[in-house]
Image 1 (cartoon, rainbow, N blue to C red):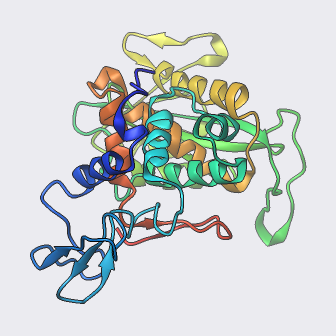
Image 2: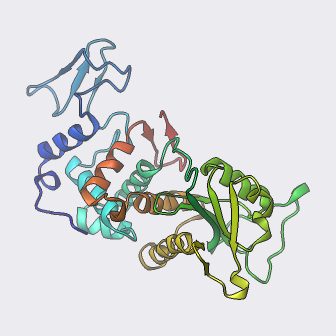
Image 3: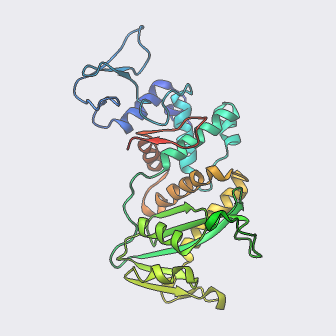
Length: 317
């Protein structure tokens, strides 16, 4: 991490507020209620709380936290700024217990802040990976004990297999070589489920690289080319054909989950995948450093809400 913890935005509320306003409102404040940007007044004086604005069109009052994952939070903005920067800069994540100690908040508050920030890191309507002449690698992995059984057709429950596929949580990841990643938690790995994830997240003009699994045989015909490596024969690369990039992403994810988070409920797994995918897609190799990464996450907080009682979010974007 390269965070300057002496920066005023981590200690001074006014500096932190200006920091969030500069990122969220680079062209000036706008009303999150009606979208008005011109007819907005900043309310000042002892009778108004700091950072309060009023929209003269809809008469609504708002601050920089309204219409974002931070809405209705009583946590100081300076602590929100520190949390965003810590989670954006920690390659394998930062636990809620660590956030609790560093920010001097309760564990419950730190846990909820972390989930809100993960929601901010979730991409909204992302463009497909790959394209003509580009390589997209796809692979599946399993992590953590499954908490919901695999339900087959007609309500039948799948029996555990020797390989443990029905005992663990399945994940599918797509990586554009030299670019971004998409990682999805799926209920069960089938050719149909894999195709659904792949065609939603990858441009079919791409070159597709997978292992020898027959799950990819049919969907592979929909891409420009489908090239495989035979892991069963201990073949891991042939010319530029490999799945080492996507497996590298899984390695970062699993080391973070085991070494930092240690456990997460299955209902929250997708949020953790979004967190790791965000950092990978905005990594230093692509020219994005810690401060820029945190700013991207703060911008991503707009138009999203998540409540403590409801694990699912509502998104206006």
